[in-house]
Length: 213
Image 1: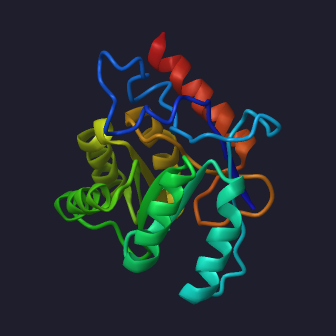
Image 2 (image 1 turned 90 degrees about the horizontal axis):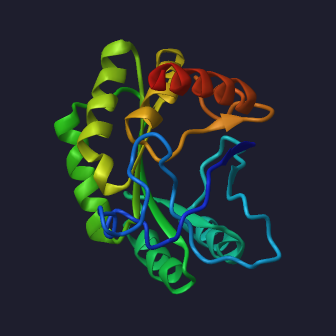
Image 3 (image 1 turned 30 degrees about the vertical axis):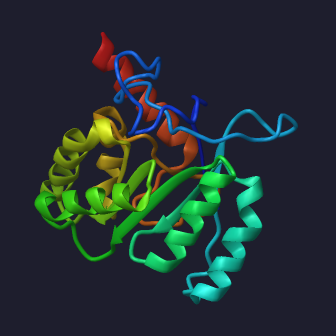
């Protein structure tokens, strides 16, 4: 299971509405993932929780799981490549007042930034509030590519993640550059390079304290 918690800000604070006059916090330090309306009986701390058996699911099963979970979620995260499923879920999520995250994962390597930037354009055109891009980092150069991508897209609502042993550094640096969230595990890692929530919190606190001193 993977859990991440972020401070709440109004759903209006998305890539479409963020401006100096909007009252939304800037990206970078203190950035938060916009979340939709939710019942007052639920915790005020949003949570992203995933569970995977390592086996791919067909679109029919995935659709059923998404629709069952949507009423209880702050946000819905769908692969950009799942065009038909994403189209339906974007509409349903917006009707329910949920934040839409459209994502892409490159499991073998980190493509050049000029390959990744068009994915953000595509996600926004499909209705994303936030675009999430996760890439396998084989070395520090791959982390640098993702850092440059984050800085270039930070005003558009971006989540960037680097996987693999070399990508652990990116899980700390990318939020400082403007990624709206990062992931930590509370039991078993769901991706290579993940830190525990406690490790992540301690290291990020130290990193931000140094940056502000």
